[in-house]
Image 1 (tube, one colour):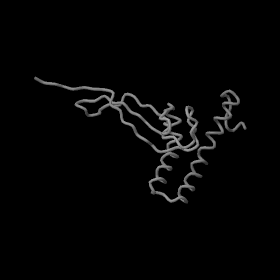
Image 2 (cartoon, one colour; image 1 turned 180 degrees about the vertical axis):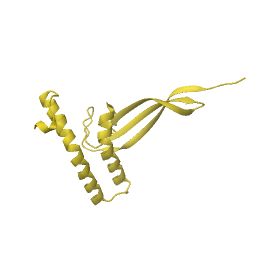
Image 3 (tube, rainbow, N blue to C red; image 1 turned 135 degrees about the vertical axis):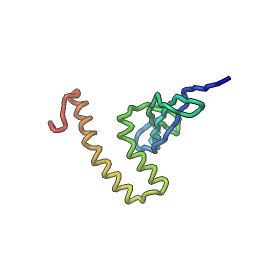
Image 4 (cartoon, rainbow, N blue to C red; image 1 turned 120 degrees about the vertical axis):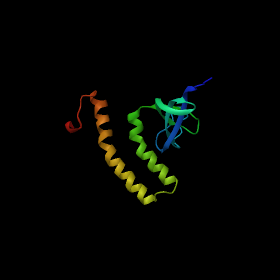
Length: 130
């Protein structure tokens, strides 16, 4: 007799790090939020084979509320979260942290500026128009 065990729903949670300045919509805590990616897998004999669902979250450790975000927002916040994590684990000095944070802000500012323009003009603006 041969038994084959398939499954689904096993989830991996990856915490990319902590984000500061994102207040929780439920408890209004400004402490920090954890940036999390959850991936669900099809399994064969309890071995994850094929991912079938990936979701992204900002999780408040105070009230345990999670706010779902999209892939674009996750990728925008991930470098900052990873840098914060490296600082907390002592892998970078504060001077290196400040330098890297400034570089990330320089890359991020045109994107944030374009998002603001799009909101104000209803999505029809180009960053070079301003």
